Structure formats: C-alpha cells, structure tokens
Image 1 (tube, rainbow, N blue to C red):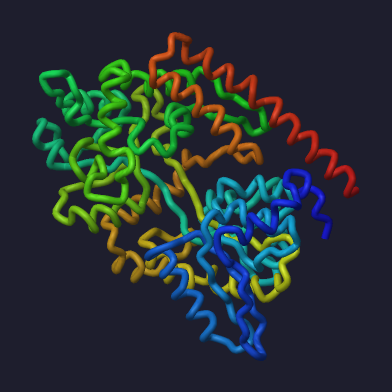
Image 2: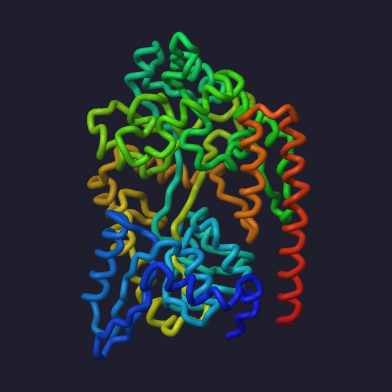
Length: 446
C-alpha cells in the first residue's frame, strides 16, 4: 500500500516507540487452523466486558476465525502510527468524530463493497449514525455503540423550588429561570448550588450554536464560527459567568472538576440541579445514588426558534479496518456478526446504550436498565439531530474554539463576535489546505 499520506504527518522514527512504548498490543496468539484477527478497542471496565462477550460469542460460533480482543489506551494515535509503520491491527475501535481524519489520511479501508456483499444496507441504520460512518460519500467504518444527550434533572430540587418536575424547561428562557430559582449562594456570595451550568461537565462546548439554530461549518466546507446564531449562543453561555461571577464559578467548579465517576459528581451530589449529559449518565446514577428522583428530557432551545426544537447531539463509537490490515476479509466477517441484531443488542445492552439499528427487538427495551432509553433513541431520529463538523481538522478547530470560550467565561473585554471571528480567520486557511490536498489527490487517481 501507499502510506505516503499518513507518513506526511508522522515521523517513522517515532512509530514503533509510540505503538509499543506503554504497553504490548501485538503479542501473537496461536490458534492452529484459525485465522487470527487482531482487534484493538478503547473500552475498559463494563464497556470492555460487553464487547468481550460479543467476541466470545463469535469465536464460539465458528471454527475458522479467532478474534484476539485487546483494550488499548491512546488508541487514536496508536492506530494511525501503527498503520503508518505497516503494523496495524485488523480492526480498531475509534471515535466517530475523528473518522474524517483517518479517511483523509487514507489510513482506513473503504467498506462499501464489503458491506454490499454482506447485505448491510444504509437503510438498516438510524441515518445519523450511518452518516458518521461515512466521509465524502464513502463508507469507512461501521457502528458499535451510539449515544445522544439530554437534559438530566433532579426532580426533588425542582419540586423544592416550586417547579413542576413533570414539566422540565423546554426553552432556553425557562432553563435560565430554573437556574435562578435553584441558585443558592452563601453569605460571602460563594456558589453553593446552581440550577444549570454550561461548563458542567463542559464536554460539548462546541454544541451550543446548534441549539440556537447555528452551525460551525456549512455544507460546502466553509467555516462559520461567527454566524449571528452562534454569537447568540455563546453570549448565552457567557451570561452564566456574568450572573454568578467568573471567579465564583471557577471556584465552585474546582470542588468537583475531577469527580465525574464518583459520588462527588456535581449532579449526583446535588450541587447542580440539571446537566447536559449522555445516555450513559443513568449508569452512574444507579451506581452512586440509586434513590435519586431524576428524569431526562430534550435539551431546551430558544422560545423564538420553534424550528430547532428537538436539537440533540449524536455521537458514535465505530470500528474501522486500518489500511494494510493482514486479514480484512476475516475482520469483516466479525463485523457482520457485530452488525447483526443479535450481536448489536448484546453489545449495546451490555454498555446500557441503545442500538444504532433501525430494527430493535421488544425484549431489548423491556430489559433495558435505563428508564429513558427510548427517549435517547428517538432523539437520534429527530430532524434537528447534529454531529461534529465532518472535517479532518476538527481537533484543531475545537482547540482554537476552546481558547476563545475560555476567554469568554473569564469575561474578556472583547466581544463574543470578535472572538469567534478570530477563530474563523485562523481555521479557514486550515480547511482550505485540506480541501486543496484532497482535490489534488482525487485528480491524481483519475
């Protein structure tokens, strides 16, 4: 294979050390008479156990292929470096948001023909998740476990402040009102409890524009960071620092900044009445505060924008076949099993998520431990579901955006519009370069 596109961004001198420096991820497994398919995955704990059961089921179902399943830390970098060095695994479990990077570097194999031969069709999947698996009209991955987000709220706190817990905030204005009702300050004006904080947990700061009808990148690949709707969204975000005080919010967050997977989690510890969180949050509620009276609902949108109601973040874990894999045919046989209703429901139930397939068994919902699992699944079908911009430079874009968001939250004197404009000016040339390279590469193939 031609590894030039990958090697252009990596140094061969660091490849071997990067792949093997921290752990052994390529110890040969001997299974006489069987083809060994090496599968690297990022999951740990119960999420890893869920895929382990699927792997074991597949291995026991036939006698020609053995999937060697390994949990690998830092899988993004190790996969692309191993591929550049000519020593990739046969399968790698990656993050959907980063697929454009791997596809652009030609680090992963297209799957269109293999999927067609296997009878896997686009209409088998919830549309947004099939979209995440593709780049520039080609299929480069297949889904494993999906996710959407929702407003999680403590019903008892709402009840205590006189808010009907059966009618959670449906608009941004109502969410602001709830925040003010739930706000508790001590005598020194230190924050004791907040109703909502855009920075808790702060995992999707890029997403706020989409709830206001904005977008960070248009369909033609133009960077649109400072659109009016985006400016409005980030002015709303900045409003919390103005309401509470930037330093007060910082001090408040320091008390639980690294406590997500613990009883000191801000939401679990009743320090915030509501949070934007994903389908997985129920796992932590059930683990640490089983008696919490909680619920989940669609995240609010502006009252004057009924057209964006139902806006929701969608995300997806994916599996790819790295370019240069030794056993792509056998690797895809395992992927076919994972994509079956049986394999997918086994995996997604084990991770307590919903399935990306359109077809779902009644038993899956009946046995699911998350009481709001249908909400999360149904949201993924909404016309206003959105995902991260499909660009290879998303990591750089996100870093540039985060820099100015930090300034906003510290109440920088510059306007939100000017700060966002700076991001657009820095990122657009990066995107232009990507477009230029991809165009030249396509022309060279003709």
